Image (cartoon, rainbow, N blue to C red):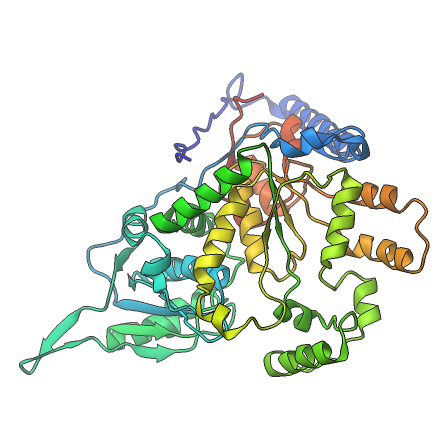
Length: 480
């Protein structure tokens, strides 16, 4: 999608000059009170309308409506800078190396943070290293997954990027600059990068931050920094041509006979172990899950029945099927299932599995699907990245099951209380947001709206979304 130009703000001139005395002041106060009342009434009315662009009796919503993207009602993606944003200077303070650990989407977030950290420190970013480990069975590296040339070209006005550390000649010998290794604090504030990290960079010429997962605070009170993250995530990070072609061929085959949905079935060992949801498995499988939890997570007493009752367990494949049936989908629905192995695959299969490449294809197919359904979007990097990405490129339908609301319904069904089951599930599902613009009241969003001169009558159309995603959007007031 092409990047839109900067939003042109219109500044109204006060009528009759700047005076008016006491009467003028009283008049302006009365106008302000009226505006506040109108906004309040508008908010109350539209909040009860339950769904903005997809209002009405949502439990009666047809499948045709779900297959269509919601009307954007004027919102357009725009991650371009909206204030003074000078290009990186010719001279930087040194080189920044990072090792991005975790899976594909955790690494993706780390890459966004690495670019921002380089901008903050006026550093030259060395192409980020992608961690290769035994769990993912993948050592593709950045160049094996992403289009490096596109990445560097897209960000040339934001940061300086090199593919590898340069060599220096000293005492007649050529050698690479050695970067001093640092371990950033988790969710480190900007001040850590402008003090501790920058001092070491200036002293040694280069620093190596490892590990680099969640090492820069998400909440940063600087809209331009957040927009830079958006430019990296939604524009600069493009998968390699072979991944894009394979993903598109899968989408074409799925869409050859109509619409299709994608489901991220987070019913996998790491998530089940993290959530402490073991009881539905046999004793041998429970031992495997408990062992995995002990080796990978901090000790914590978790009671399965309590966890499940409050929606802390990932949905099972059966529960996903029951939800879809209650919403009106049937056996003819085409589904792309993005899911990993629950228990270890055979060695032969593992040898032929490219973890990051497979995840990249899953990501693209889910991004392009007509409907996306994450079954566990809590700590899931895959689901959370996709939710923002799909929103950025249009209000595509996303079905997000409310596990806490659904849990007692599934428990009742297991106990034989099945009367009205499908209708109660359907009502619960259609109370959730389905990817379109709806009412919201995020304080940072309000600031953004005021900055764009959005009229009060448009307030009900704004989606309550993550503040980072908000910074990537703008409202075109000319669109009614």
